[in-house]
Image (cartoon, rainbow, N blue to C red):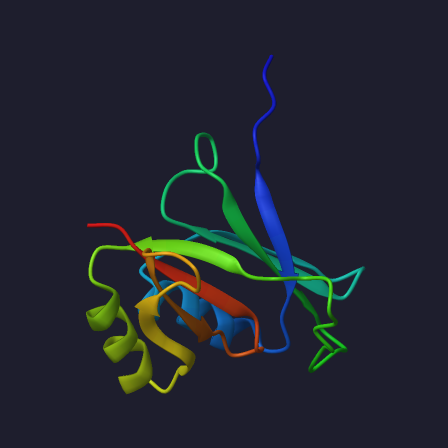
Length: 129
């Protein structure tokens, strides 16, 4: 058996708002959602493909926590997009923050941008035509 990345987990303050961001704005699908009443949390998995063959994002919502400090250890999630300008325009029109507009990466030629999800997590958009 070979190893495979299954998912990345991030904690979110408002699960419905986060699911909307990742599905409606970034085009992922809600793959599954499960409430755990005894533990007072909900897990939702979003992604572009099935968990059986692609890595996905686990959104964890602890019912008694409305917001988190992001800390300095986490960097970003990266998503390939065919047209970075259109992607950023669509995200901005929907109210998402674009702290770094499209342009070549520092010391390179790859065109990138950064968006923020509703909890402030950085999403790097990388143009791949």
